Length: 296
Image 1 (spheres, rainbow, N blue to C red):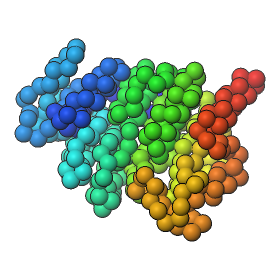
Image 2: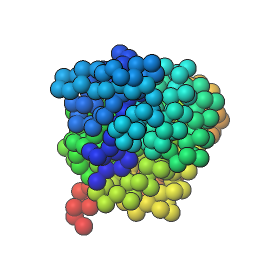
Image 3: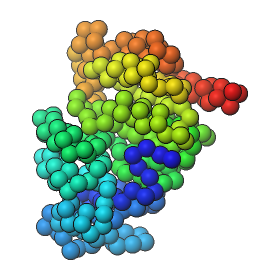
Image 4: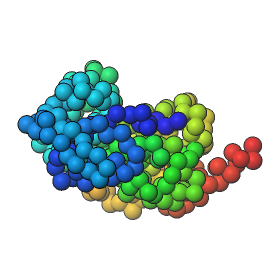
């Protein structure tokens, strides 16, 4: 199995007619994703030709859902239009909305996340590389050729560290790799993904990548202690980050002793999560954990 995204997912791309939308739709199609349409206001009735097929464009998410039964939307629209696009997808009844856009105003995210919770829609992102269930489907910008299907679940705040960890563990493969995004407000948390991987019978072990700022990793540690029985390996980016300076992601800022990489590592190790000092060390810890599973 996989979490959140499978070969049966019916995906629409909001902003498919734009340059980024077209580029990544091409890549998602090549990865086997079942893309059933694009959504661009004012361009309903048109189509976009890709290598092996022509994808219809709808003027609204409601039209796309009515015509295709879409149950996933991937959002490739500029920041100032993102709130409207996500609200439209939610109101159309799409249960999973993957927001790739970076630079979305926090108050916009807060508004559409609250709307999503009330409607029962899962948001991934914003500022997310999306998620991939290798060999099944790819919703976002994660390169599909890094690693194949396997038994590891991966959840990460960082896009590039998602890619690196997939490469480091490519010989084992993944059920699903999900980039939850690094903004101060995100729709899907480490805890959400940990619960889904815990419940997935095909996921044997979990890699969790965090970073400085906030307390998401500490809260995840408490959740792991009470609810996760599968091996979890961690990595926390930002051990050398200076206090008070935002590092890369809008949510990656340390204030005093709060939100430091060391504090997060301590919290995770206190509940039995082995934490690597580098991505490569974390990958080796995961190899060791998988070998232990095989022994038992």
